[in-house]
Amino acid sequence: MVITCGLIEAQEKGKLEFATSKSTGMKMVKVPGGTFKMGAGEADEKYLSANAPGFPSGMLNTFKPVQEVTVKPFYMGIYEVTQKDYKKINGKNPVVGALGIGEVEVLDAPVFNVSWFDALDFCNKLSTKDGLTPCYALKKTKKDSGAIVSAEVTVLKGTGYRLPTEQEWEYACRAGTTTPFAFGDQLDPKDAKFKVPNEKRTPEQIFQSQVMKVGSYRANNFGLYDMHGNVSEFCFDIYKNAYVDGETQIGFSLDDSQFESRVLRGGSFDHGVENTMSCYRQAIAPSVPWEGMGFRVVRN
Image (tube, rainbow, N blue to C red; front, top):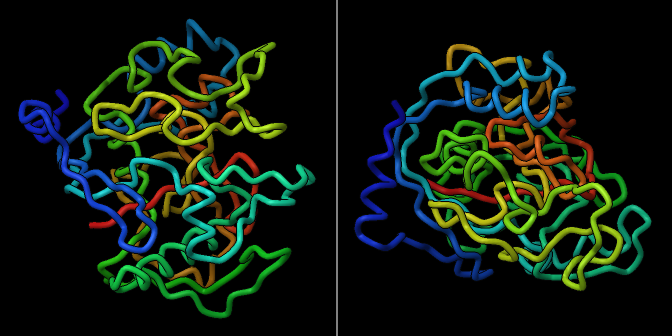
């Protein structure tokens, strides 16, 4: 049975606890600690069988084995890092002119066209701006077209912002639920931005990219928006083809493995609905920026 004492307590009190970045105004919510079942369970397999019969069994196996995981409380950005947030810290918006989409800038939409290394660098700069100590050391960084494409990374015992672990991300996405989605057994287009066949764009969608402004849909039980769809989100972890003994891959140096794939979660506007499931995970090289890929920050 999934233990959700922290969630129940927060709901009974009728309030959630928030924190705000001093330098950007980014709003974060306290995710209560608890224990949950991580991975593709019976409900997830049943959903895929009924709704995505062609879903590769080999890919499904990468969401297993289901494991009971305990997560400590942490703060998480209620939104994906926006173009406005990123521009405040780095002085420029990597979306503008990116990937041939032209001069498109919607500051309240998620930032994209950033690498995993860029996300770590943002976390460090935001930490310093807010008077906190960085969680990472990046040395020997190399850039290509403005993005950091390689670096030697060391994890520090900082007090500042960082990327979530894969366990933290799924726990926050599920928000006390055991269904395929935080909103139930199905995900409706009115609750998330994902690829719908023959979908007609609305005036609120960004021209060409279709990324939606953050907060366009309702939040989950933890007060987090867009955990399903919009842009896929970086986790810190090295991607493994299956879970191993419930371990979180954290605390290593990338000196000899800087190009190992990292974990992406949540799916994007360009993914089918099955790719936005709470259990869904995919891999991406840390050096690769992509228009469907962003991140959100956490801190202890």
